[in-house]
Length: 163
Image (tube, rainbow, N blue to C red; front, side, top):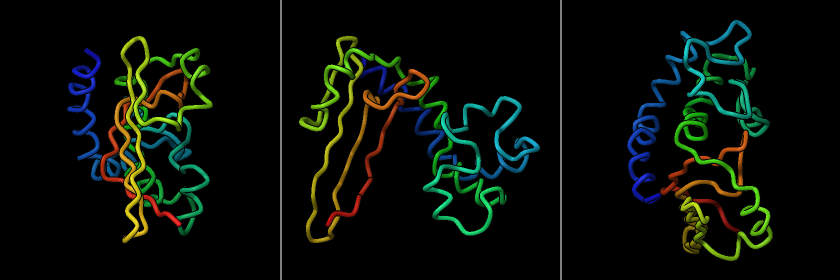
């Protein structure tokens, strides 16, 4: 049943991901708070759960200019827009006992499924001739909660550098 639920949740997730590039511009332009840190008027679902519009330390290290600049806040949402929706609306509750019992061995297998049916698939397939690793990650982030919620995730086309 959770596989069906995940498949149904994939629809709004995909709509947000496909539209977040132009939605980011609209959100920052028309719905930023005066201090330029949050979104107003029902746009909280488009924010990240753990950082303001100025982004995290990694984002701030990659950008030029002030993190408060319009385009730098847009870039943050283009990369992370809909994060709160993925946690709060289509995420699942965090199971602290499942995570505690499996924390130290979570990297020993690709697939995890909790007793309530929530699941995650995370792999790393090395592609040596391009010095990258394909790292698909789908399901729910069972080991990385924010606000006691596990994020809905569907990362298919991710290629990380390898040494």
